[in-house]
Length: 306
Image 1 (spheres, rainbow, N blue to C red):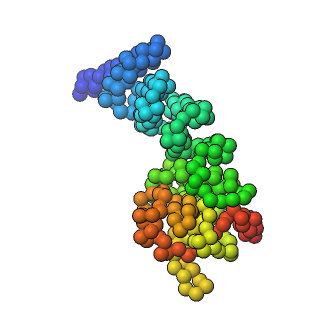
Image 2 (cartoon, one colour; image 1 turned 60 degrees about the horizontal axis):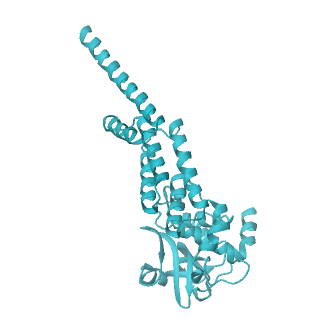
Image 3 (cartoon, rainbow, N blue to C red; image 1 turned 180 degrees about the horizontal axis):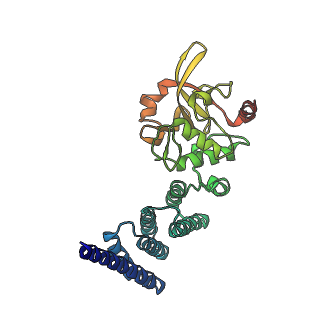
């Protein structure tokens, strides 16, 4: 029995030493710039030990380095997503190696966007990655740069609030595709309807409660859908005389005559709905009213202080 135990301990020790030797070799290969060999060894190590920290660390670094050296946008994006997927396999997000690769990818994504050379679809894709993976919404970038790139044909607002509305709508647009989650209020895990509107308005400094009914009660001045402008909150539900029951909230995304688009979070996530969609077949018949939050921001602050 003692002999068997002794042999087992030797086997465990040998296995640990072998892995340790491979980790040392892996770091050495990467430090010498031998990326292909580093990647190959890291992948072999991960087939035997899927949560090997050294292998995940080096593989993520290799993939990020490869992404930086790629000139075509589509290939660069695929490689960056691959590096993020590898990073997300770390078993412990407090590990120093994880924190290092997390910062490296995060900063590189920011640098790509801030250079201002990307086409809009890639810029939006990277902004979405920043929001979902790093909880970085680049507020300064939204307010100073993205506002100029938004399709102005979708905005029919005139006056001093133009820029703020554009920031709000661009921000909401970037969250399109975020999944639905009951009581959700952030892009990493998902939104419910009022969590989405709350999160978007917070991006321009306006605090809303995480509740559709309470949001609809913040401002007493209600508008009809005919008077709506992009950026207004829109509420859906049922009404009995002066009392109303709010069941859903969204944001008016665009308005062109009678054609209206709404961006909201429904069962299949954040969507822009308009003609030939659930908006036309379902939601339009359930409209309660529209509220111009930007024009009545002060009354919201007063209610919040009481």
